[in-house]
Image 1 (cartoon, one colour):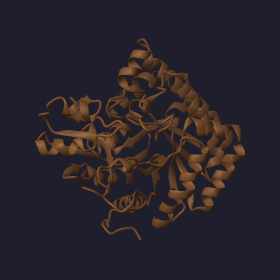
Image 2: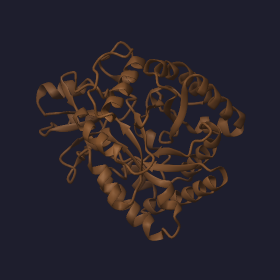
Image 3: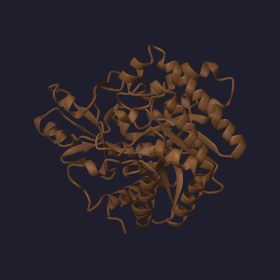
Length: 384
């Protein structure tokens, strides 16, 4: 069975000191609770952390060794948030710099260059998740009509750099694009179209298909009304590797007064919580919860708020956890390497804590997803 990790953007990690403190503290406690280590982590590496580790590469070795001693290992990298994902207000800044900005490509390659020292010896593949080009309004406006071409050119350059890294160090690194509501690439049909029309015509070298792929965030897909099977089917039909699956759940509800009042309680100042109505073919996207509530809603909706994967309801609102078993079936049948992780980063912003603490909650999520992947009964009991 595939091991199940979790995404460490739930922890503070704007620099190396914060990252070490989070991984060797709370993350190590999660590993102790779930057992069967070492626990794989999808580690968020901010641009500042990458700079510090590049300047002092011996610190990368030390972090790898300290993680191993704590029952942890780096299994994947989250290269989506460039800046401080734990700032008091993040919102659309999480999509900056976008892929038409040279800083994005430089940061992504610099993070990849650290991986031979950060991952355990014998690791053959590491997934790096990245943003779906950029936040759609800003990405389109700032490129003067050329944003998509600039992004494609940068991704091609990064793929060439990753091919050289694999030749030199024997480690295959993939940059895996993660569709998200409101971004330049919102759905897996759009991702396949971008890969096919913007990259494939110039694919005279194998490194594009080998080093560029997809990250399936099941919360994002549910918000965009994509079925749990669709991302996997679409990528397979287009020859795109799914190298990363983020197991997460979204909120959903009706336009009645009680549901909208419950949704209002999830509005918070740090992260963006897009709301979508309509189906996958004709979605309408509101940037955040207040924008949607101000529109006098009349249609069923889905909200990009990551909620615990073991909870079919939160504050009386339904969640999309019912999509997870079908997604697990697809994950089990993937032909290549895939990193599976829990990605409920919004524990600290839930209106009510569903368990005693978020460390226990993350551990319970990992055990729950292990059960789903094993295709057996899932225990609803607390963690040991």
